[in-house]
Image 1 (spheres, rainbow, N blue to C red):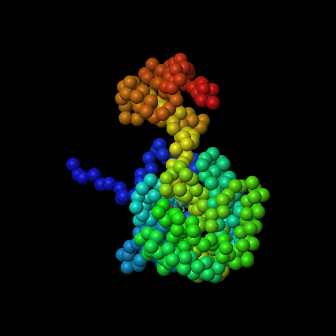
Image 2: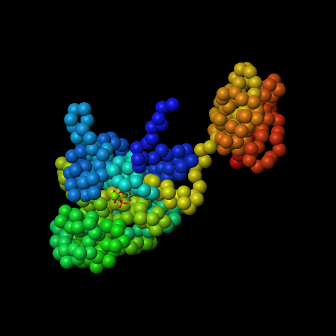
Image 3: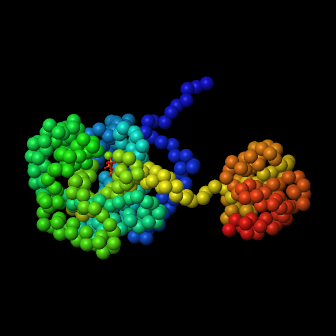
Length: 422
Ligand code: ATP
Ligand code: MG
């Protein structure tokens, strides 16, 4: 026997039992996004490496050590997308959708990062991403946040709370950065190895450290809020008012930074204490400089991405219900080809009526077929044997709730089943 080939580490198979949660999240998200006028966009999973290097930032974890980068057969350096915003912006510029326009886009799909796999952190993971272009004010920031709140409501997901912060403009951030570095240098002895390394290259990321030993140093750091420029401060205050008026609860977290370099002003995260250290389920903010950085005309923008694996894990943990996609009926057929033919016709007519029907294939005696019926998850088995076939009738057997077995004419089976299945 040949050796079994296993999946790549950190890349998961999503099996049918879990997929039902995924499908529910996808269906509900799509409806909520469309309710706000966002339209789906799809762009490639592979892009030129330069796209991510330029947008996400050379000194970020993603670009430094997490990208799946390779040379293709022409010697071009390509990278599997580690996130969606860069590709979305590239597609928007390239197709002339951004300049002097307002756009609301969403996308969903797989992202790839070479991280250390653990619960809630994988090397292939999935995001639903949302991006809004051409709107500079805090109104769109508020809309994006309200949209996420509506989504949690619609999914009935529990245990998420909202944190917001402002990163100011690149100029105010640069001033804050200097102050932060001064402070961190004074605490150099207390910094862990990661933070020492980041001190000169990307000191703001130190605030995002997940090492508990770093908490005290971080808590005593100067606050970004105290270093905002006036326009950013007004923007932030107005956002807070919009959220207040919508009765949305939030915490201002002046240590909230994002792992990607392109954010400006508003940043937000939805976090939970139910997933261990992989606490962020949804994260986003404003990125007014990115379109220009990627060669487009200056265009204000804001967006967010939610992590499907983490959201699904939360829903599964709280035992939330899923879309039922299991068959309702299993048709057992015991007989020669004429009986099988009659059974197939009957199954098709049931499907015409909107019922989900598995038709037995591969033969087997009645006992075997009933076992298959049970395993399929169907509520009813229909039994079609030589006798039933001759009389154009069929037996309805309840597999779950002990209703009496009945023999009915085939012409009446839909009526019988529909009565029982409502
Ligand atoms: P983290 O701080 O957890 O590493 P991040 O800041 O790198 O997250 P983003 O790039 O903002 O994450 O991605 C948005 C969301 O995508 C995250 O909040 C999370 O839910 C999800 N996500 C990011 N990386 C992974 C991963 N490796 N595995 C699973 N989900 C992920
Ligand atoms: Mg990360």
